[in-house]
Structure formats: C-alpha cells, structure tokens
Amino acid sequence: MRVVLVGSGGRETALAAAIARSPTLEALYVTAPHPGWPALAIVPDEPQEPLALAQAMNADLMVIGPEAPLADGLADRCREAGIAAFGPGRAAAALETSKAFTKEVCAAAGVQTPQALIVDRSDPTQMTAARARCDRGDVVVKADGLAAGKGVIVCRTPEEAHQALDAMDRFGDAARRLVLEDRIEGPEVSVFALCDGTRAMPLPAAHDHKALLDGNRGPNTGGMGAVAPSDRLTESETTSLVEEVHAKVIAELARRGTPFHGVLYGGFMLTKDGPALLEFNVRFGDPECQPLMTLWADDVLPYLHGAAAGQLPAVPPRFANEVAVCVVLASAGYPETSTKGVEIPEPDAQEHVQVFLAGARRDDAGVLRTNGGRVLGVTATANDLTTARERAYAAIEGWRFEGSQLRSDIGAPL
Ligand code: GLY
Image 1 (tube, rainbow, N blue to C red):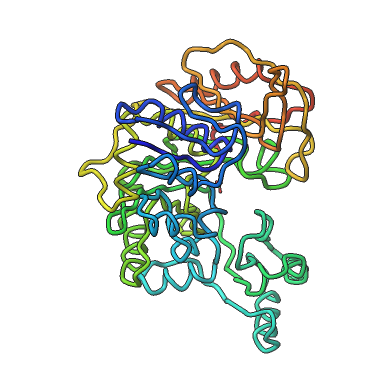
Image 2: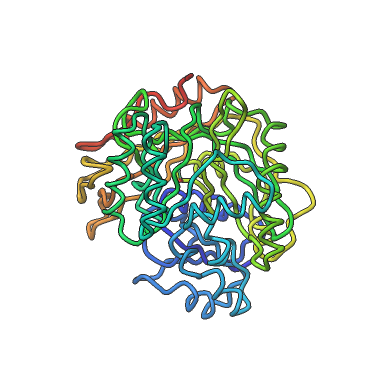
C-alpha cells in the first residue's frame, strides 16, 4: 500500500512507526522533513501540499493525524479525488470543531451528556439566560469552536462563572456560541473507536495527564503523558461505552449522509453515577497515540485503510498484552510559549523503550534541537504499570535538555 501521512507531532511519528512495521506497506510518504520519521519514510526537501503529493505518488491511502486539516475538509478533497482518507470529512469533523453540534448530534442519537445550555452571544435574551445559569455556579463555560485548547473554563463559584463568560470575548468567532455545561467530577479516560462509516470498533482505552505539573496543578497542556491500556476502565466497560456512545453517534452521522471514517475519540469523565461524555475529538489523542501505537501488534494498515474505505476487518486488532507509559518532555515556557534551538542529547536506544520526536528538528550540522512545546515522548512497555513507569522515567533522564519540563507522576495511582 502507498500511504501519505499528514502531520508531524508525536502522534504522527508514532503512527509512522506503526505504519513502517506493516508487511503490506509499499511506500510511506510524509509531507515535510522531520527528524522523527522512520528510516524508510520518503521525505521531501520542502513541505508539500498533501493532496498534490498523494496524487503525484499514486497513493492508496492518506492518513490525516491532526484536527486542523480535517476541519479544513482535506478528507473530503481526498475522497473526491478517489483517494481513501483516514479521517472524517468537514461535516463529521464538526464533532470536534463545534461543541454545540456534538450536543445536538448526541441528543438526536439518544446519547446522554451532561445538562447544558447553548447560547448565541449576539442574542441578549439568551445571554440573560446564560448569566442566570452562571448565578448558580458549578458550570463549565465552553467556547463552541476550537480555541487552541483554552476555550473551556471550569467554574465552581458564580463569580468564576461570570468572569469566564466575560473572558469568552477573547476567542472571537470560536465563541460566537457558548455551551454552559453542568460541572461534574471524576477521573478522565480517552475511549477510541475506529469507524468505517457504519461500524465502530473499540481500541484499548487510554488516559492522559493534561495539567503541566504534578498533582494536576498548573495550566492545561495538550497532554504531558499517557497510559494505555488505562487501568480506569475494563475492556468490557470500554466495549459497552463504544456500543452506547460512538456507535450511536456514527449511526446518526451516517443517517445524515455525513458518515464518519477514521478514529472517534470520546473524552469521558468517570463520575460516581457512571461515565459521562465530555467531548469528542475526531483524531487520535496525542500523547495517547504513542502508547497505543507501541502496543499495536497487528498490521495497522488494513485497519487504517478499512476505516477509510468503508470496510474494517472483521476482527479487532491485537495489542501486546502489556502496559505502555508515555512521558512527555516539553521545552521551557510551554504551554504559554516554547523554546527553540536548545540542543537535545540522543542517548542510545534501550530495550522496551521507544522515543517519538515531536517539536524537534535537526540543524545543518545534524544536531537535534528543540523546535516546539512538546518536544518528544518516551514510551516504555512492561508487563505491569510500575515497571513501565520505572523504565520510562529511567530512559527519559538521558533525553533531558536545558529547561526541559516533565511530570513525575504519569501513570501514578490517583
Ligand atoms: N491528549 C488530548 C488530546 O489529544 O486532545
């Protein structure tokens, strides 16, 4: 199979590593240079437009990693050009780009989500209702659209809620509509399902650690580490959630004529009353993808291509019967900013450990340097969580660079 991979974060270098192991791979094309690509990847000298590259290389499959090109309709353009795309079209990608759309689809599909009020900020009557809701406190104020991961504010008191409502001004069009959702509590878990338009096939659940600092303190990040399979959900609980949530939602999208192809990622909170859906993403989580791809034991391409082309294999993929822990190393200043150009050491490879480069580049002299916020992820595997954590933390010491930041409690018990 001839594959074009879009994106260049830790999620994509992990996907590339899994694709590179595929016995059915003929050629793997990436759209831009990056030091994290596997040796067999065909790397252009300059960034390439993905669809033009796929057409020029006669690709069978485009795997689209990040949400931005999905929101921009890249998967639609691929399908129109006769190329299978792993990733939903723009209409189905609205599950990630519009929280109000998710609420509406879930309601139509009979999927319960926390109680919410949806308001249009340009409507004074609706804003009066929003302020009345804020008066009660215990609310999560969400910008409807994508706001660089900053558009969700969790509020306990009425004062916090009113401040959050005012703060939505800064998100411009992304906050044209707001979702004010009842605040709930509990640990979070990421539940992924491969979807081929009609079927939803569960993958092992994972959990990530979004706050910058130990003990879930500090600002939110894209994720400072992840564990798969998560010890927060059993395999049968994961399967039930996918049947009750993902499968119903993709059935509703198919009914609307906008079928979902790719991976649907449900972010759930495990409350005392059971799991509650907080949000959907329409791509693999990052860093969750790093432990998932490390454990993936089958040929990944029949699954990625099956989801894209409308026919997943009959049986789910096999995963190594181990646990994988990914610890992220971020540059100084992350998440507000990032530090570029700092030299990164490159220790020797270690058994049971994989390193996926993200915000990194190689300079003209071949030296590896920081080039973004989340610089790399170290994923270690073992038969048990304790050993996987120990291996990940021992290995990451060798990768520390000036100003590097990491959490020391990834995978630790709650
Ligand atoms: N790890 C969270 C995300 O990918 O959105």
